[in-house]
Amino acid sequence: MEKEYKSKYYSHVVKIVLIFIVVGVLAVVGRNYLLPDTMGQYGHYRGSDLEDQRNVEVRSHTNESCFECHRPIRLIHKAGVHKTVSCEFCHGPYADHVKDGKYVAKLPVKKGMEIKELCLRCHNKIIRARPEESIKVVAMPQHLEEMKVQVDHNCNQCHMVHDPLLWIKAANEMMGMEMKGDKKN
Amino acid sequence: MSVAVHGDAVAAAANYIFPNDLHVHWSLMIVLYPYITGLVAGAFIVSSLYHVFHIKALKPVARFSLLFALAFLICATWPLLNHLGHPERAMSMMLTPNPTSAMAGFGYIYTAYFIVLVLEILFIFRPTVVALGQKATGFMKMLYSVLAIGSDNVSERALKLDQKIIAFLAAIGIPMACVLHGYVGFIFGGIKANPLWATPLMPLIFLLSACVSGIAGIIVTYIFLMKISGRKIDVDCVQTLIKFLWGFFILDFVFEMLEIFSHFYMATHHWHTLEALYSGPLFTSFWVAQVGVFSVIPFFVLMAMSLIKFKDSLLLFIAPIVSVMILIQVLLMRWNVVVGGQLMSKSERGATTFHPMWFEKEGILPAILIMIAPVVILWIIGKVLPFWMDDDGVETA
Image (cartoon, rainbow over the protein chains, first blue to last red):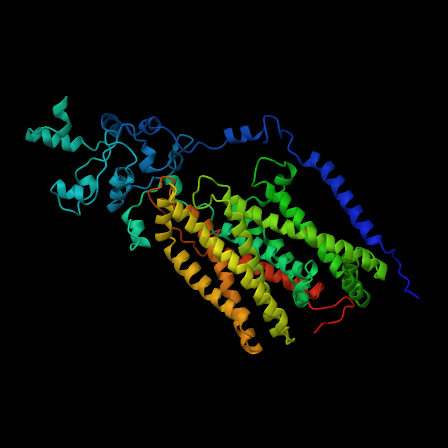
């Protein structure tokens, strides 16, 4: 004689199937409530996200924003071979410095050998990523040896960082020398 | 580049990496994610070897490995949630299914596997749960009643029905465990822009290393739990697990090596980058640690353990050590694949380095906490569903 049970032998299986059906129905119904209103408005994303993205704070500006205050640098920078280089490449984002047209904090200034590191980020010969005509690349300390200066010299001892050839051109002029590239013109 | 030069020397000799390649975005958390899902898939395979393939020797760990798999599966998403941030948005993946996104597929694959695993545990433990529920009082009685799905029927007829359902769940569970972890491998193998990842062998290697880590994890925890609770260890079970571990590890290690050697032999146009990577930043973590120490040594130790009859005490002494080595091997493999693949520049001219910090959001400490969590969860599960009990709620062995 088998023991009597309160539940039928299949009752747990039926309950599981019922749970699945209830959860499935809840999921389908609940989905409509949980989906953002603008989902799928333009594609497989929330349409109002475009608005959100538009309201994201602009952190980077163009050089013209910097030049509004930094007038003297503007003249030097715009005249030199670095004229196409963004101020922010070396100084950091505008938003860290100015907010709502007001000065908020000082941007970190590169000092000492940090300057060398910064220059080599673009001017390192090992990069070989751009043609020589568009960017001058050098190997260190080979370049210093060729220029006959001490190998512990920093880049900004010869090159004015905002117009790298400014002092060199001036020195050449004083000495009555011509630069390598000048002869062709 | 000379092969004699390696490690940081290579990194210093020729190194240019684009600024957008400098930072390793898929950090330690993404190393843990395949590691944890691998443990889940592997532990499930151990259970299936008993429930589907009727390897009788594995009976002592068959139930335990299911709970082990569940504990780790619960935590499998944690590294992802921490990595991505905004865990409250996780459900969006389920609400707005995207059939063309491989990554978004995870939500459904994970959930489907979770359901199968939970159902299998509920059905396998039902007689035990009913027996325990009759002895329990108060909250525990209610909990056991819920876990028994509100049924007290453990008649022969009910158990026969359960057996059929268990066989079905275990049978679909194997391909699903393979899909879950094969999918994780596919996520990497399918990234064609990364020559280290882009290989159709990736899902296979991930799957095999998953089996290996799962079996090793079960061996370590089984022996440890038995030792601390003063129970008798089933030597035959450990011996069988070691044999399966060796079998899966042969395949795993051979495929890992074949993958590299076919890249090397074909010398495809990305080989110079991979070579620089393997002889450079990955030299120590791949060749020395993963291959040299934690693959070759366990390989021969497992071979000896499988072919020679060891004394029981020696077997039980070496088994956890070699299993821990295998667990480290798999973790290193995840590291070398996930982080290693990001150390090379898309410029193919250099490599970057990556050293996780202790206290950052995705650092070493959060990684340790996430790895401890499944152990704590397993301990809690063990309070409700005892690991070593038979259907009548009586302690085995």
